Image (cartoon, rainbow, N blue to C red; front, side, top):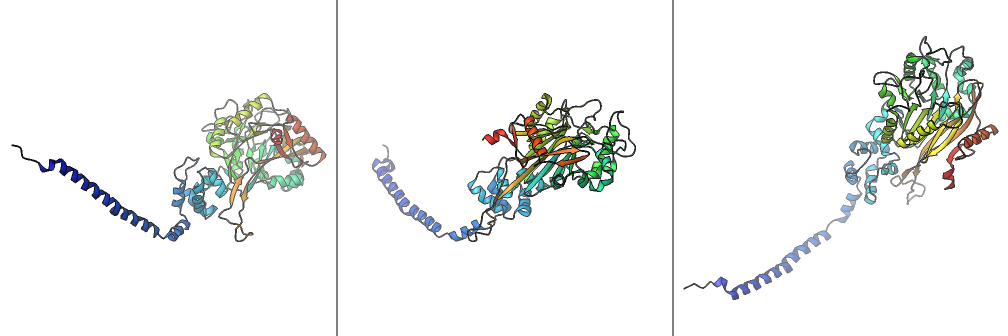
Length: 491
């Protein structure tokens, strides 16, 4: 006989289930609701004024880094960069970054807006790279003018009566007054960087020209003339720098180093020759690279890992990669090149093809030298190509030429205090960059070893009209010399 099991009784199971449901309902209604009410009361009792004080408290470098988070950027954003910005640019940068990131998605242009510097420029300043030898100007402030002239010869051979330095040998200390007009001298000295194409090697002691033809050389001590002329950098990738062979090239590099004049286009070895020169202009990092168009029997050898030489743009594996490297490391890339075409007022097909390849590789502007005459100007992919500046200070013959100026700037967008309309609210003031530098062409005429600024004269107007004609009418140059593509004017 089976024993009866009370717990298996259906009536019991039903009553137990009802009791369990009632118990859970009671627990939810009273226990959990009381717990939730307690939490709400605690939240209501939180000191929001204290939270507001914490929110308004000055932010730290950690707060700024946390606000930025992990982002894709052209440079690593770290403690060193942020502390440099705080210590050297603006001491409220942590707060500004924190506030900016509340309403904006991160972009590298944030640094331009808040600091007035590109991230590439800030990174070099913070890491000490701007102190290295390949920096021409560390920081120009809100603006910078970079001027380029064409060929300059400092030939000092006394038999070369046509050499400007021989003509003015008795006015060496006053060359700017005796050999250049006052307006032009002001531009040469006033530019933050003035670059020329140096067409005469400096030779120490007795040297031997590479052949019996007309060759230029200058005594090594004449390197200080570059300073007198206001030159801050020279191009040595040209057809004259090897007029006195390897000795002349080596002496030139040594003389330039002694005179503290940076050079582009060549060097003591391939690494030196390939290294771009940099400057920080109006908050942006600017790169300079150079090359001669083509090598021939009487020009300098191409630099190697062990030997001095220059860089060539044709039949070279180096130059386009140099431009690409500069593009990765700078906000604006300037190519300053010496062509093979020296006498035609219009660029030939080889020049055009090379100049276009420079732009395609990352150049923002191409500036050409060696032409004894002015050559035309073209805009390719929106980028200017000034094919030939002409002879700037070369001999006693008459030459027409251009002084080209690039003017970089950043704008400060001031915000004034609500309490005092005349007081600037530094915490809200921002910066902006002009997308492209303004370009100015100053027409000049060299005659009898004197170069004159002729902008605003009948001679100058004729030169400008000629330059526009050589550019197939695709550029405009106003009365101030400002250069603009015609397509941009139409827009």
